[in-house]
Length: 346
Image 1 (cartoon, rainbow, N blue to C red):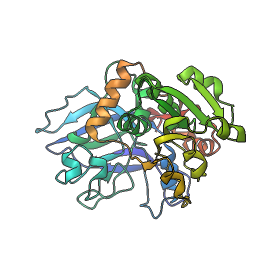
Image 2: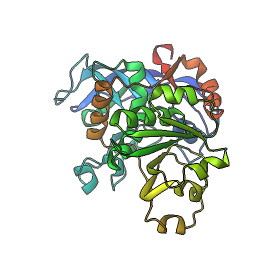
Image 3: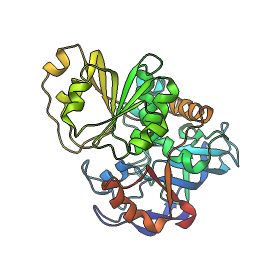
Image 4: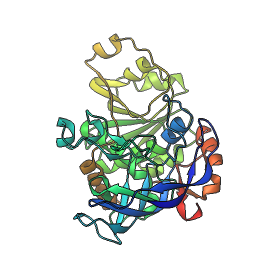
């Protein structure tokens, strides 16, 4: 076991504080990563504050991890010391179920092992990226291309793949009208990626406050959802809407913006149940769907795509002592667009 410094929440809703945690020894197929940067995802806050149900404490959040390999196990074939790598939202799965065999490890029927707030196969709690080092099986590590700097690459390991996967699955590309609902950590990546895929991109945001940013990042149009005229003007417009919003929505209103057989895909996860009039999907043969991150192979595909198109996250780099303040700012939508922790400050 190796002792490393980390930031952890000692209990639900408690402020995060500096501590130490134990990392397992490097096993035959393990990679030891010196973490350089860790993104702050809204889901970190949901879990620290038990918004999605009971959690495991102390909790070291962080599943947007970018770093450098410092040691490999004797059986490792995919990585070498010095490689630039990333770790996203999962560190293991059963590897034998239909979904795992198809490269959809995130939907492992036995339950994928989360990078934090989970139990590994030995029943030990997992600890995430708000720390200086992590040991991960090589099959759940991805390579960060040289064209991407590690700080702007870290958020791609959750925010990037979370929007890339549904955009690809639902065919975002030339000739398609795509709306990104919400202009935050996920939404700004959705705009960049949808634009790079060749779609006509519209941002739907509560206000026009971030309009200049949206257009700069690749949006063709930008509308305020607080304006009732938006829903009249855009009725029946979109082939695909990707909702990154983690608050309850009027789904009936947003479904009205879809073309016949269009899809509204949710990647934001509200803590509360939502209501729906089924005629909103029956009329027009529309789809209301969900999507969760992506498999390991697709995550690597996304990183390669982003490197090829010069896409990184828009970040605000912070020291570890600013984590608790950053959480409050995320809740107040006061970040453009992703906080990233310089883990050298832990």
